[in-house]
View 1 (cartoon, rainbow, N blue to C red):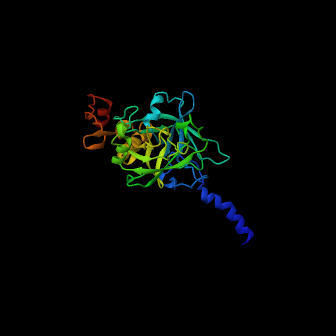
View 2 (view 1 turned 90 degrees about the horizontal axis):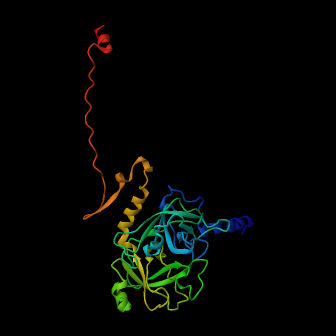
View 3 (view 1 turned 30 degrees about the horizontal axis):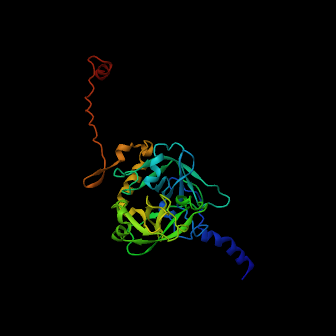
Length: 320
């Protein structure tokens, strides 16, 4: 092979395999042009450009894992963010996939949206939509799409995390780790949980963890993925203390409609968006589903024609 072609191959091959983008994510970046393509698309096989960490404002320590869905939207667990939900003035999301010359980029948390039916320490609607003040930078940063169909049968799923839930047994990893899970159906999950089946809700799903607690990863808010799509968010459970109990995660396929409406509403909460207020673009929940809220317009009274005074300058001008 010619040395020139070999040199070009050496230069361009890492770029192709690492999927390095040309620019950072902007507010108007199209999601379809920057979607994650699966494991092995970034600098490491165990990394995903969509994976983020959410750190709280109290001690700036790790609170939750998250998934990057849109330029200003991160998806995580409501049970994770509830303790600091009303202290978001210094909470932030930080990227995990970066080039050597890049530093971990972060963005402040401005709003947190949680479903109305959610209750703390329960698995029902354990989902939180986090809005950021600006897009996360980084040439490896990308989005992940949500699956349209829930997993069925004993298929293999994957989760990414650092092992913060088992720090009493093992120190958390600095880099994200990938662990495979085995999906099980709802009835089998209830049988395995036994007396603890009250943990499971209608919006939850289950997967079997690795038998060894040292191989287990159960960080709240971290993604559960199938192929290149997001199917769930790690919810509360028994973490890695007892791996015989299945892992519980929020089934995002059942909450797609809520996610779609919440993300749309979050983008239009500012009066500066296209000169329209929140009320003109807000979606509200009704008995027949979500509908667009259109406030009634006040009718302005018709203006009466202006009457000119007698012997005015205008009348004198007309007489002439």
